[in-house]
Amino acid sequence: MKQTAARPSDPKITDAPRAQKRSRPVQVADQIKRWVVERDMQKGDKLPNEAAMIAEFGVSKGTVREAMRILEAQGLIVTKTGPGGGSAVGEVSKDRAMSLLGNYFYFKDLSLSDIYEMRKLVEPALAAGLAGNLSDETLAELREMAHRYPEPAQTAEEEKQQHISSLAFHARLADAAGNQLMGFLISFMARILSDLTVHRRLYATPNRELWERGRRHQIELVEALTLGDGRRAHAIMTSHMEGAERLMNAQEMRITREFMAE
Amino acid sequence: MKQTAARPSDPKITDAPRAQKRSRPVQVADQIKRWVVERDMQKGDKLPNEAAMIAEFGVSKGTVREAMRILEAQGLIVTKTGPGGGSAVGEVSKDRAMSLLGNYFYFKDLSLSDIYEMRKLVEPALAAGLAGNLSDETLAELREMAHRYPEPAQTAEEEKQQHISSLAFHARLADAAGNQLMGFLISFMARILSDLTVHRRLYATPNRELWERGRRHQIELVEALTLGDGRRAHAIMTSHMEGAERLMNAQEMRITREFMAE
DNA sequence: GCTCATAATTTATCATAATAAATTCAGGAT
DNA sequence: ATCCTGAATTTATTATGATAAATTATGAGC
Image (cartoon, rainbow over the protein chains, first blue to last red):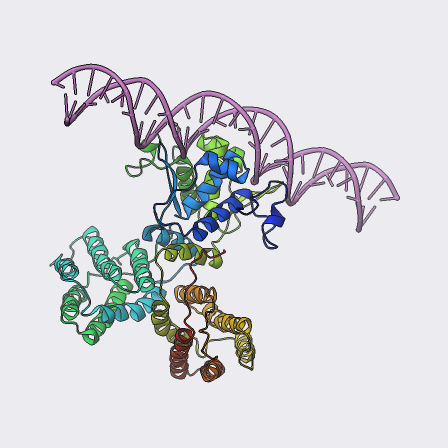
């Protein structure tokens, strides 16, 4: 039965009362989405090839291609050439999702304090929830990350590396979260902060004390996580976030206005 | 000077070391994005028309169209026909952003408890931050929303309407947030919960007491917000979230596995 | 000055053909 | 038998041109 297909003649009637002027590629893309949902298709499952879709939907090649690009841009399909190729369902990757969400905030100029308000709320909760629930491998990994860079940075470039490394620590923690929503949010914030450009004030010396405290926090945090001390993990993370925020403010950092590279 | 343009001959060299096998439409789309950033283009600003882009990038019409579809799918441009038409930069709408992010979680089957863990953390913080900072209009609007539906629902359909209405209350609150990131997150969660299908257990009677408490919470919350009592707003919202979670669990709700209709 | 038909402009869709990329598979060398 | 090479095949990719649809601008008529 299908869905009476998208007859080129009157697509409005076929397509519910809503949406009068959606382009055909969009209609085709939507229909494919519905198709995927109805059949409960999973990550690798293959869609009909180009020729089959042209026949199925009764549209031209160009229209089908545009539809595929739409789905591809959203990260929902991947396409390959060659025998056995064609389009297949693909999970939206975290990177892709972050990039697409980043496009939204591009126009919203998010402030650092917005991000830190959020981090101070969520990161401690994550840490508390993770205490006692991490595998030995993960803990070892975190311990290694925390111990990297035993000395404060000498150059701006070095400082940026340390900054990114520190954020990678948080992203790693986020990946271990049972709560996918929380994990994504934290990774996203880490990503935004990683894209920052360091703008140290000329007269400001690198704040060695703040840096040292931050490093110590990470080490103590891993300890608390290992021991399963949720309350302590929460407290350390709270303190850590406050320190990180001060460090950023001291260096007058600004959020880079750019689209995230997928 | 432009960027030496994407010469059809060797796009790899022009396009940095990374990315060897990105399709031409994707390359064109990326270049347009860069263009927008470099020129700091704003919401209504117009892009060159199809013909100009064909000339500019030295690619075919089909390639340009596919590139436009990619950008359109991401919500970055809007396109119109006719004189004065063409493509223009367009802010990514909140709905679009939610829909795109929803695609990511489609494959992740988020649980209700994940969402409520997050809500319990963030919604009270939002409420506290909003206390005393809302305009009279917004407060009036919220008050109206809180007073709608003075009686418990009789039918499942009615109940669903009340559920959605209640979530709209939270979304409205989120819109008023100074923190865009927090506002988006809360709207997003409300959206997911709105898409739920009500699955009441057959033997379960609608829990009148829980419903009544929820309604009272909203009214008291608006009061606290009006008076600027942040601590009280925080407390009420915490309690409200706990109640809402219990209500959902009591009705055995499940998250609908579908793509959000943007 | 207003209305309405018409023209001009721009994207949207379609159709067709040629090109490029990836995979499979047959055949030959070792 | 196994490994390599290269042709055949499948599939997407790019290109071109023609026609349709939508929108705005123009101007004639009143």
